[in-house]
Amino acid sequence: MAGVADRAISGTVAVRRYEPELRALATLYFELARVATRPAEATSAPPATREIAQAHEALSGLATDMSLSAVRYRSLLSQAERIRLSLSVLAGCGLGWLAKMHFILRFRHLINTCQCGEFVSYDC
Image (cartoon, rainbow, N blue to C red; front, side, top):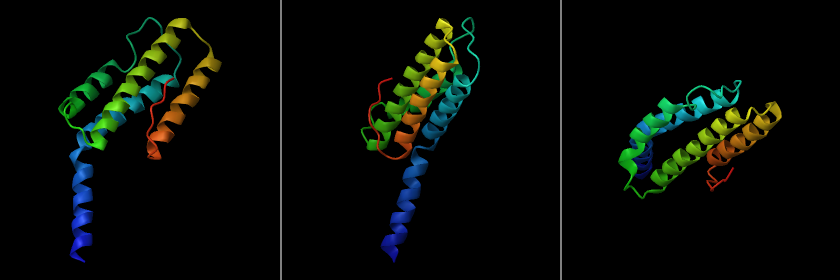
């Protein structure tokens, strides 16, 4: 019985270990989703500038961490940067809703893939 309790406690500690990084990534992806569903403004600052900076700061401590979780979080940050750049390009091109919807569907596929634990590189 003690072994089960130890495993449960260690699992909770592992989740809490990366809680600040998870929160920063969640905030960033939430902002990217918000930006993707709003009309584009080509003349404004790049989307999610503040959130991407906060995520970089939160994940800076993971630079030398080679655990699977740390590698995944860094990869999610990299994907968020790609999404952010794609949203900026879409805003600059003045593309219509059809192009945005295509992008949003690919974005949702990425999120679903990450949530299922089948983390793979996904090039947009």
